[in-house]
Amino acid sequence: MMKYYRPHSGKGYSRDDDHLALFQELLGRMPKKLALSGKYSKEYFDAKGIMKNVRRMEPWNLHDVLVQKYLWESEEALRFSEFLLPMLRFDKSKRASAAECQAPMAIIDE
Image (cartoon, rainbow, N blue to C red; front, side):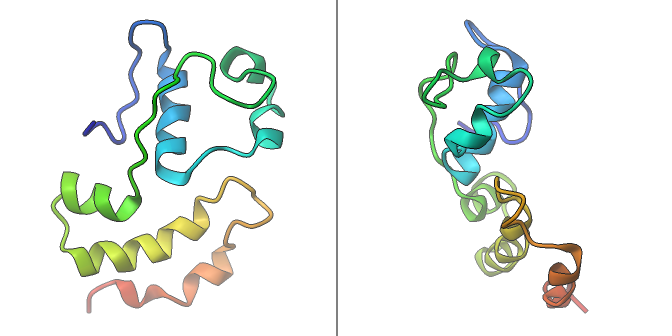
């Protein structure tokens, strides 16, 4: 379970499969339209946009990754998660821009 962010291959799945699965464990299921839009989508996703080779995923939110794996303080992990997650949205039209990300720079300690 403690595998972020080191994708690796395994029995029946590639390193790229694992990388896509890690994103979905962190951010939720990839929208079908996006999952099926890539040049190599058919290698990784079925017609419903569900991963072919990785069926079992364990959701793990960013706050918990930072606290449990990297031993961050909860408040610091919360502030950083709130800052970072808008930049990681699957839908690039909903992703935070660089200008929008400048405002919350208070997450950096003085």
